[in-house]
Length: 265
Image 1 (spheres, rainbow, N blue to C red):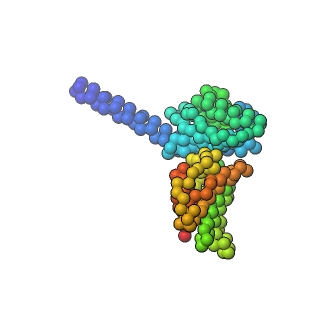
Image 2: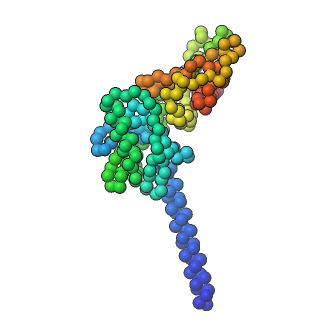
Image 3: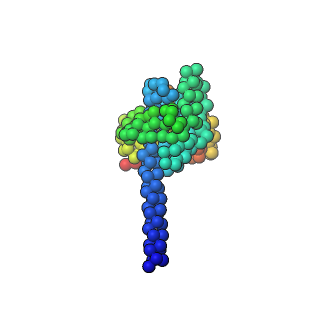
């Protein structure tokens, strides 16, 4: 009887341990799901930055963070353990910035490097170093992400007997498939906007102007001549000409997603 009691106590202990581990895992997954999304930064180091359009975008699937830091876009990784969070090395684009924008950017990236914990209450995300509040931000609803992203995409493919011109702006795509035809418009769904914007966020827009075309069929009229342009925060980033259907692999995913959405019935 004594050994039976000990055996039952052992299995009870193991069962409780497994339950605690399961609950901890479930809570961790729930927290990661809650933090995933796009946020507008309202406060940085106790100062109001609500008009600076600073953003944070957390992607739970890839464990990456990206956003706008005042002049440049940045991206990197993050790690979470309960309410603890840390950001890996953050890489930024290299646009020339004014003095104020540069200071804002330095303040934001420094603050992110110091973050150790976070809390979420409703729509508000707070990033802290122990008990010191470094950043406060509010999540955007999916309905507003496309409206507030400030991205405009433009794709043009032209040859003597062919013309395609697609423009994405504010969640809508204008479509023109003939020089003399009238424009038609497609409103993207929430999922389509999210898919397209995720592909944009993965790019360093400064690289677009340096991309080499992988083929040259357009020079002998064997392919339409194409260009791709992104406008963001008042700045324009445009690729050199390339063969339609054969873009540089750096923009292949984004361009394929954009064209598929434009041509989807």
